[in-house]
Length: 116
Image 1 (tube, rainbow, N blue to C red):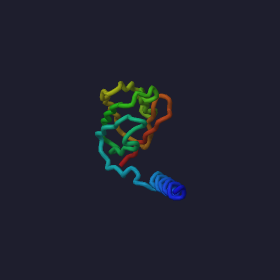
Image 2: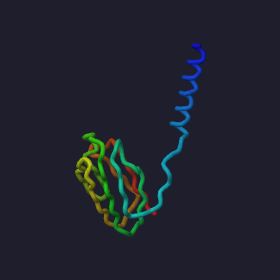
Image 3: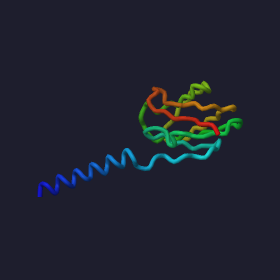
Image 4: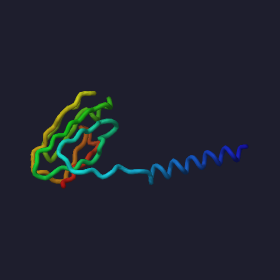
C-alpha cells in the first residue's frame, strides 16, 4: 500500500514539474495600439506589441493589493503613474516607439514593449 501511495505522489510531482517547465507558454500577440493590461501578481499580458509610428493607449486595471504594484513606470517615456485598486488607469504613449520595458515602482515586476 505504501508503494502505491509513494508511486502516485512521485508520478504526480513529475507531471507537475513537466507542466511547469514545458506547459503552454504565453501566446504571441498581434501588434495593436490599444491594450487592456491586468495587474495581478505581475502584468498580463507581460509583453505587448505596438505599431511604431502611432500613439498607444494602455489601460491598466490593478486587482492585486500588493503595494509594489501601486505604481507603473515607463523609464524610456519618463512616465510614472499611480494605479488605484480596481480602477482602470489609461496611459498614452507618444510615438515613435522602440523596444523598451516597464516595471512596478520597486522594479520587481516587469513588462516588455515590442515594436512591429
